[in-house]
Length: 257
Image 1 (cartoon, one colour):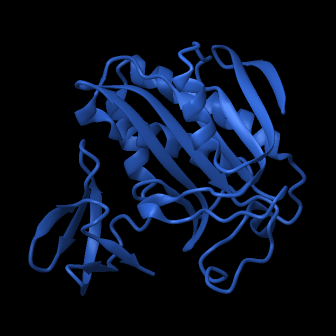
Image 2 (cartoon, rainbow, N blue to C red):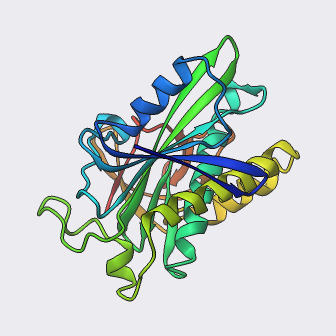
């Protein structure tokens, strides 16, 4: 294990590099449970992660040494539970921004927090919040980015991509991605704390995958065509169909790509 401190946006942030771990999110939870104060946006990065998790209980599989698996400790200030989707917004924007430095076109945020290049997934986020009474007291933002992988298992070969595939001349490093995301998380956190919430939501909405484009979804086990209009303040996806306009959570709707 290696512990490095670098000076970036708004002061020092810590990067903990682990050779092998089952889950960086679980390691971050242990750090928080020790009651020792952590630097804002402390990052836990694994060279090899053996049991990463994704949304809806899925597994995030990654090739050792070729992809970024990291978790960031986020400490919001008096964030009401009803507004916790703001963490999804700022983390999605941070990762989208960093990837745009390498892949400037065709990037979007697939609600709630996958990053896409055209119709293929390049990054995913798993957020786990700790709640005390009515506020979110801490959050662990788990991030997986396909970096150097150029071949994927058959099950996802048509739906996944990587930085190396999209930009063959890419010669960056995974640690650089980790620290760049730290900078962006701090940047958007400051925007949130300065009260620029509307700006954050507008940026997130502008980058939504297939927004205002008729698309197929699975709703109530039926294939339905609808159009994404946006996301409300509680994080529900707003979709207009021929019959009505409704809001959906992750259990209520599925993209059909």
